[in-house]
Length: 242
Image (tube, rainbow, N blue to C red; front, side, top):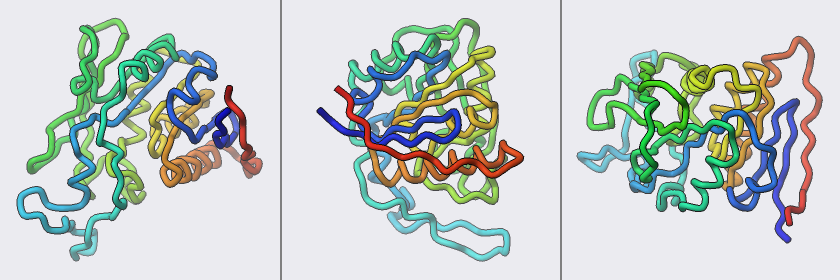
């Protein structure tokens, strides 16, 4: 018997644990949005300039240079998801969107989603998401280039591959009118923040304790912003999963 941490914040339920440890016990949602590790070794590059192996710096609004955020040493992008994890993720929702699907060998699909990050330098121009949604390929153009961002400009990034909440809200829109959202590999929970802002029930799963704590904080903030009164204190508990 394994134990996971469970945190309930309004209609959002967050689980700290491995995907296959938790996912089989959760209710099927209308839409799963997954952003698993791609297995391309991005974590090794962390906060260094790829060409010169020196710390990356960026100008802040005062015109002075500041070093990039140090997210620590970890192997979050060492391996892509297993076939079993991908199958469980697709089965967890009536519809499914998986970012990085071009890296993990997804089956043919008509409605791929493309996020044009309006990047500069040697980073990818865009990221692709596989989906089992009906329709044609769709593009979302949204700058997310270091400190140059079209949204969340005054909010520090807390995860090295953090995606915009606005992107996740767009993903939800692409699925029509889903009434619930799930997010395996939630990281900093951008899909969760979008779901909370839209008033949708949500669950998320994250194995890393540090990222889990960040996700809880962001969901708390999103929940508070969506209410006219102080939110109830989040309930935290240990739950046994057979």
